[in-house]
Image (tube, rainbow, N blue to C red; front, side, top):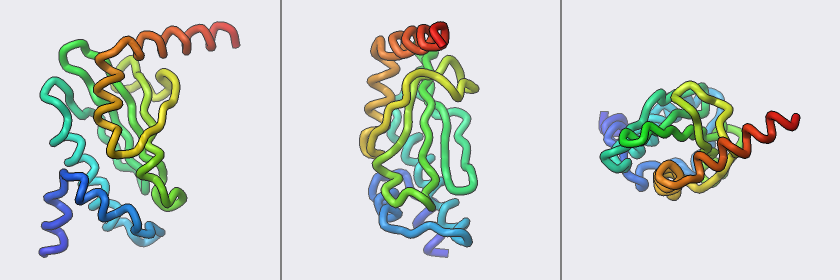
Length: 144
């Protein structure tokens, strides 16, 4: 009971850091469920009030989702790699601009550490990076 309560109340980087040296393998579904819950809680608790976490998806050993700026209705997609195959998963979090909460192709891929994810996403949504990424992606598609 104490074990479950500890991981359920996650939402701080401290709770996510506890998983950094954990060796996820088949059969560790319950442990990954707890990590996923910690990540979701951390994102929700640390986003500024004009941002929301939407379409959070827990896969078998990965998580992904979208963060939306409520004021300008801009979206960013993020994806945590499969933790079984990347022991430094916390240093390779993918994020990119998205047209909406179903756009899984979006702008240019960017990567960061988990500690930088929220700031990077919020800064990207507020800046012109999204428009620039979109324009560059459209140009690449047209020239292909």
